[in-house]
Length: 145
Image (cartoon, rainbow, N blue to C red; front, side, top):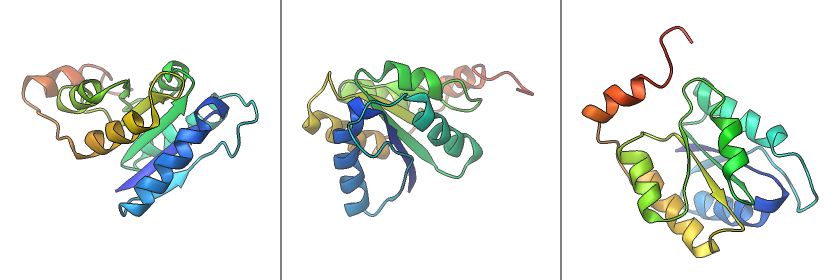
């Protein structure tokens, strides 16, 4: 799977570990940065990652920050993006099964590295249930947007 990856300084360490794991598991990763723990503005890195998913260049996207909230807000500004903030296995599972999330956002300051890696693995494997959930997500982006 082709995956967009981005973080700000507060999510950098987990981003690097997630990138290593994804690559080792055979995924193609496009890393949109940042490249260090030096303070940066997260929209500069999250926006291009979300655009890549919205345009279909990448199938999924993972963004990280301190809490993950700001990163999700940026990603969700793009039509077709459904970015969920995930903090445990259940939130990741439901983001896929019920919301067909094509991006997730993780908060490095709020979860352990082990939890982040488990969330990513589960989220990548979890299917979308469709059915009544499809009708609901079709209402997120109005036609023609």
